[in-house]
Length: 88
Image (cartoon, rainbow, N blue to C red; front, side, top):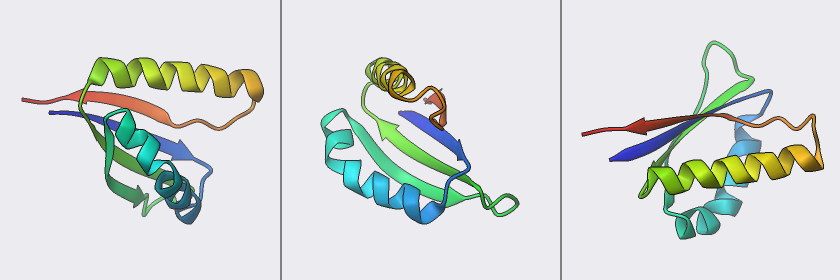
C-alpha cells in the first residue's frame, strides 16, 4: 500500500483542512485519498497530512507537475514537503 506524507510549514490547520475538503473530489479522481490530518503539537505552524494513493508513480509525477506550475505562478509560494512511502 502506498502513501504520501505531506508537511507544510506556515499554515493553519483550519485553512489546510478547508483546502483539502475543497480538493477531495479532484484528489480522488487522481487516486489520492486523505487518511489523516494533523497539526504539530510542538509547532502549531506545521501541518501534516497523509494520503493513501493507488499509484505512487502517478502521484509523484502529478505533484511534480503541480508544484512546478505553482512555482511559475508565484516563486515564493509555500508548498508542502512531500514524502512518498511504499509498504508491504
